[in-house]
Image (cartoon, one colour):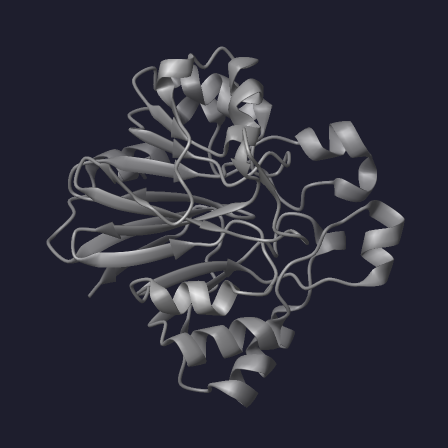
Length: 276
């Protein structure tokens, strides 16, 4: 059986399609006809090492950081360790030495600490399109829990709307619904595929482990229905058992709110080949 890296390298991408692999949590690899991008990979046990056993991984990574070869772009939504994992991005940056990094200004120094040169880092302006090869990328500010902005560093929490090869994909990073969020999404091209964090939030996780939560299942279901997303991929709900909710809660919310919604529960290392 070919390795995951070989599958990513060898898979042919047809017009009006994208290949999407889950790496777990909000980690995704996306391949178009002219590039390979990786978003928020967390392939180590870095959170447990820094914050204790409450954050033990539920499964081993689907590939090793040094196997992230041939990557053209690494996208980082924010600086939390399960999104900017230094034990992943340090080796990965060396494994793909030509790769560029797209990340908030809040992440710049952390990337420098991993020997990522400044000329490899692009800080996307909020809600203004950026051309990367054949991709059009729009950074969408999020709120985790507040929408934070610094005059020097820019928006702290970002999602990415990627228009590529005839497909529009939205990776939300970490966020909750906040004032102006729905209106912002309504003003942008409608995603064919929306990857959003659906592990909920509650006082116990927040107070006992400092876990900052994300969308509730009913919120994700309403967004998918009201904004017309074709395919919903709930994320951020598998890597840490103490910070996850049963998949049945997500299914129940979709059944109640939008029973015909296309939804995919991607397992780590699993491929979704999306054709529009």
